Structures are given as C-alpha cells and as structure tokens.
Image 1 (tube, rainbow, N blue to C red):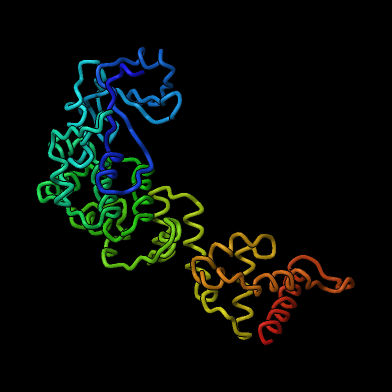
Image 2 (image 1 turned 180 degrees about the horizontal axis):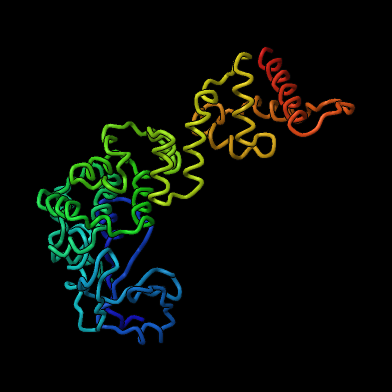
Amino acid sequence: MQDLDCYLVGGAVRDELLGRPSPDRDWVVVGATEAELLALDFMRVGKDFPVFLHPQTKEEYALARTERKRGQGHRGFAIDASPEVTLEQDLGRRDLTINAIAKDRTGQLIDPYNGLRDLSDRIFRHVSEAFTEDPLRVFRVARFAAQLPDFKVAEETQTLMRSMAVAGELQTLSAERVWQEFAKALGAPHPHRWFEVLGDCGGLAPWLEELQHLAAHRFYSGSSEQRFAQLPLSMAELEGLAKRLRIPKHYVQLAADRLLYGAVLSAYPWRASQAAELYHALTELQLLHDSARINRVMTLLRPDVVAKDDAVLKDIRQGLRAVQLPADHGMSGSAYGEALKQLRITWLHRYLAR
C-alpha cells in the first residue's frame, strides 16, 4: 500500500485550506492499474471510470485519468486511466482551479493551475476550456457560490457559462443531476447565490423557469426540504417544477401542504371561528391517523410551537378521535361521513372557544 503514489485532491484540500469541514476525502492514484488496486483488496465502485474504495477507510481512490468529449451531456466522455496519465493531467480535467489542488502524503501542495491564488482572491475560475464539455459544471459553480458566498465567478468563466446556456447544453443533462445540485444549494448557507449565479448566465431556463426572480428572495434557516417548501410558488408552478425535475415526493408534499393549509395552520393559536377550515386542514393532513405529516408542516410554519411541545394538537387529535355518532345513528355512506364530520367540527369549535 505504501508503494502507491497517492494524492488527496478536490474538495477535501480546498476545504482544509479554507478551514471548513469536508464531508469526503477523495484520492488520486498515479501510475497504477486497476489490477494492482484489486490485488490490494480495493473494491471497484465506479461504473463510468475507475474509482475504488479503500479496504479499511472506505475512502474513494480513483486512478488518474484524462477525459475526451465524445457526446452530449456530462457522461459523454472517453476515459483514459492508463498508468501514463500524470497528476497534472488529472488535475487539468477538473472544473475550477480551487478544486485542482492536490496534497501528497507529506503535506506538500501541488498547484499547477494557481488554485491557491484564486482561493486567496475568492474567485471561481475554470481550469481550462474543457470546462464547457460538461454542462453540469454550470450548476456546480452556482452551488459552490451558495456554499462559499464571498467567492465571485471570474468574468471569463461567466462568459463560458453563458455560452453553454445559450447553446442549449444545459438541456442535455438529466433531471436527477440538476435536482441534486439544486437540493444541495438549498441546504447551503446562502441559497440565494444559486439563483444569482444562474440568473447572470441564463442558466435558470429551462429547468428552473418558475424561479427566475428569486435572487433577492429571503431564505430562512432550515433544511433543504424546508427551504424548498418556502419557495414562492403557486400550486401549478410547483407541479410543473416537480414533474420537470422529478423532485422527491416528500419535498413536493411539504411544499403543497404549506400552500394549501399554511394560512390556517400558521394562525395558531386558532379561533373558534376557524373550526371548519382547521378541521379540513387537519383531516387532509391525516392528523387522526398519524401526526408525522402535520408535525412536519408545523415545524416549518410555527417552529416556536413545536419547540415548546405544545399540547393543543395532541388534545385535538385525541378529542376528534373520541367523537363518534350514537350507536343507533341509522346512517351509512356519505350521510354517515357528513354527520360525523359536523359533529367533530362542533366539538372542535367548542374546544377552541375555551
């Protein structure tokens, strides 16, 4: 294992130099073959290019490689991962100079593309013209801006991003990859920067056309899911965006619940005059069966109520479930359902009046 020529690369080096925690540590192996790594009990996991998991640390190790464009999108590349590929060649295929810095086992930095200078100057700058070969990089730069808000996009990089958008390259991406970058940006410290950077290069259309005016939107603290749910969208816009990006159902449901029931739920403490409207919201949110869904909405709308573990919702749930029609009601079907509904609304009105 000690004979492998390995270098820590990419985000791990960048974040270490910025004093930020990094979730992943990626390594590049120079001068080796797949057979050599497999003989050392590495496990191959990469489908499109040779990436392996270390047998003990489970960190990712990739053979140094070059890429040559041969088709559209971010997967249309011919890969060369032969032992002759150098570290500098491998770093040269990366997106930004700040991600093209390597560190050897002794701690020495290898910086062939002046990434250290751009880190110091707080600049996102492309490594080479090969940047344009992968349209996903436009969204990655916007996501980096949301994570590192004091960085600016270099003018020449902005020009390349704009040309890629104009040429329709962004449309060749898969919905899943665009959504992944969007979701990460929503969970970043300053998600408004995602919209600023994409707006400046024309990258919001066609994937995010409903969100073209959100550079000044105020995002509150919360998870990626909660911030998505707070986007100023209509139901029609939410449905269009969700279908186009194939957004996970739990994201869409929370956003829809806010749009449909947010007005009455956020009016807590509720008045007796809201009993009918509140009952409709509570039943649609399945409070009588499971409190998980409404708790998610209330955490979004009224975290102060959730934080103090308010007993009102628990009382309402227990009270509504206890309300039943007399045994000799003699009704069935929709008549039974309507009578039970009115009885429960009456109970809720009385409870809220107290």
